[in-house]
Length: 281
Image 1: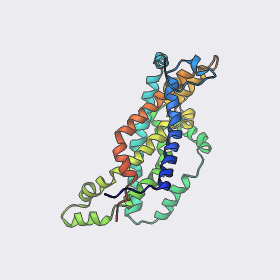
Image 2: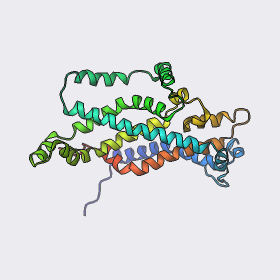
Image 3: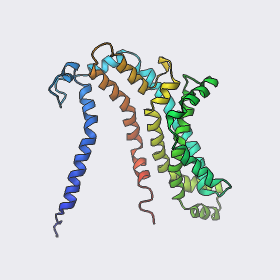
Image 4: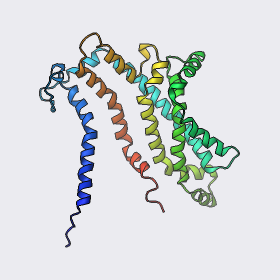
């Protein structure tokens, strides 16, 4: 039985990877640790790296305010609406530019790329006036429309690569076996595109969930705040007194929990989507 040869280069790369991972994870751990400690400990000059003597008091104080659940419902409604319509529009557009040849195809592809270059801040006034004229301020639909418009271009580029990676010969072979074009697409091609849809959905989810500036412009009433706006208001509510960092960290943890749950649900499909095409050939 041969022994594995020690490779210093591989060992060094592993050590560097572990250190980088720890540096990436530490802010998340510090947020969780701080959410369990009282504010007096957090503001002391000696940091406490383990939550000994901690409690759930900060979380209880956040829930006692009664504003978390409405903000969570608003964020979920906007995010899920955005993801659904973004995937629908982007999927159809990706199919069109990958499977068909039509006049203006190259112009459309360049237009999608050009839209990504526009700064979001330059559109705020036009977006506000548009939503105001349509009576969609302080509404889920109004914000979702703007989010879909912002996320769709890049999502088209993502899905275009997945669609192009599925050979059209698979559909043609299924059609030779007696399936219609529609049946061949949904039975053969669509299952192969599921990982790409999940990966694109994760991108759309994160963009809509964490978006702040557009929501700040469109959602002006407190009862229609999303979680990023709620978190900002939570910090501002402490502006007249010493900031309770324990409660701020507890609120930040609550904002991150739905994202973690979402990743746990889709992680299997997401992994296969990110490596799709790596073993083809």
